[in-house]
Image (cartoon, rainbow, N blue to C red; front, top):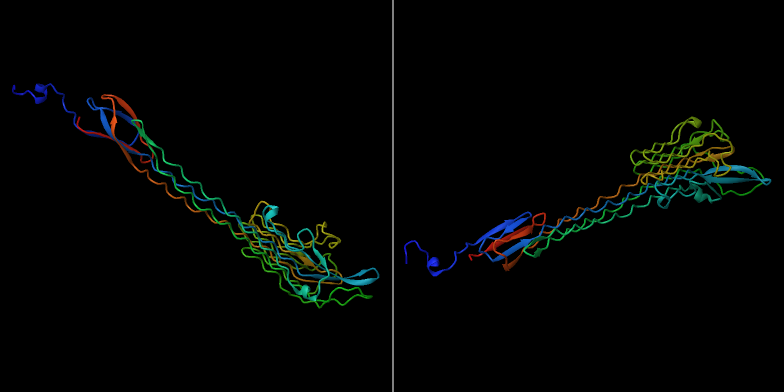
Length: 373
């Protein structure tokens, strides 16, 4: 054998192609080395996407305002005198009509009733707002994109589960009802019945937490009639979604009812000196508490007010409804899973040929290797 002549050359064989590999972390082209006709391919798709966060729960509704205390009036009727007894309701909490709960006897009419002595002394509190509904759970993340090469498909990792839904906020507390004067049950009799003793300073209703304004206590000796300068008790303002409602305050007819807090709180009831204030619920001078805004679910309603009249005694005003609580945030989504690699051995290829490769994102990969051939 001549010096410098390989065994392969002498025997008429071909040159050995050394083994090797090529890694793809992004799309590319695999160029097959000349002389290579068989390869191994290992790959994995991209990782799955994280799940979406759960949605926050809906806000709780604002509480309704408390009703005023009973107003007791001795009025002639049909040749006799009778005690008419009424109280004015607080406004409903904010939000759409299905979520609102007005205080008893309001806001579209007062109670004109004949309760017994025990009922006269009982305060009539506003209703609590409705709790918010649970938010929607988050959507699951998408499966990671696949990697491909040499006619093989490598699936991506599974998407993460969506986050849990947030719980709804709790409803606001109703305002407390105003204290009433006590007295006998109304019964027809030939002459004016004795009215209950007047007790100045009976406590106004406390505002509901959070943010309801307190109702005004009944004042000193009442002035006959409901015309200026009438003695009035002014309802507390309902809490707004941002600021608290104001308390009812001021002497005689020069004071003001509690203003509802921003945003959306209902104003307290306040008699404004108009004529015939007790003729019916359509009369605008009725001192019912105003509703919270229908566009602000968390807002509270205003407390009911009242005033003295001829031959009458009156109780104190109701407190404004409290603010509903915001819904709770939803849970975070879970991370997506990494893809599992898989391998295919002895895949036939064309020597010197080209094959497109894709690597799924994120984290997808293709590795092509070959043995010496």
